[in-house]
Length: 111
Image 1 (cartoon, rainbow, N blue to C red):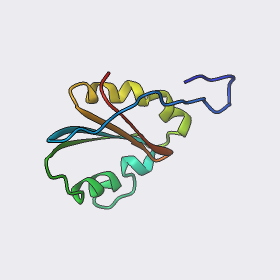
Image 2: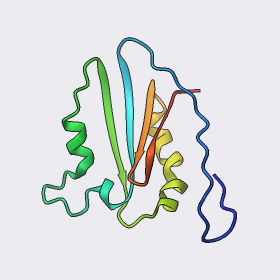
Image 3: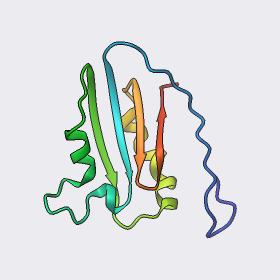
């Protein structure tokens, strides 16, 4: 990720390739974003992340979700921190996926 000059949009090019294997999987699912991801304003304090994960069937999968939403962040802020914040949560996982309220999902496999 690079920042050509102050106030510009960062360049971001995903570099990971992945393949899904058969059998049980250990999935770390990171949700990175702004107030929407954090669940700000939700009267039940669940936010959309907890609601989606709770309603998602996951047979033969060990699913762990991490809500890394920060109220007030911009897309540039999210891009600047997502790799650093998701890495420790993905370290032991066979499948990794990050979702942001500002972009499409990014999925990768261990190197």
